[in-house]
Image 1 (cartoon, rainbow, N blue to C red):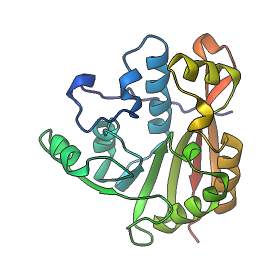
Image 2: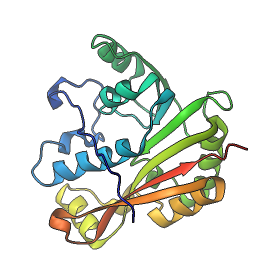
Image 3: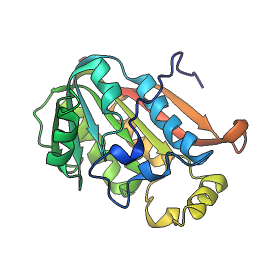
Length: 221
């Protein structure tokens, strides 16, 4: 599959500086050897697919680890998350000269007007939806995208190595991941036009693809 030409480095503060980090936030893994590099790399692959524009929406922004990078490419950063402390995180980034517009809510019913965003970003979010929720989610993403706008998503590829990694982190992947990368892809392909897929492989290129980044476009007409 075609690879992005330029992969940016994730701009992060020391992990302990971030606020609004709950027990499910994967940021706690980012400093671990091997696993931490893979966690950061999946974000960097997603960021590499984004093009600059006026407004970007990140769905499932967590503690906002992408916001410094997004600030370099977009005039306005919006975020939607089920549980994040939006006021605390907004204030945190405002103090660092990054303005954000954050809300609590669900991808299935978003509080934004039609044709509003240049880009929508979802990193490790869609696998947590049930298969029957995938098409409604992508129809809603399509609604809020401008004609010609892009959606970039990242989802794990459930291979034995990924299951093993989750077990190392004392997590049962099947208790949290309800949709496969193939189900996510099928829903995206149904609603939007595919630009490309990019795979992240395991350490040293071993174990095959373990993460997939999808890049889709809302047709201009």
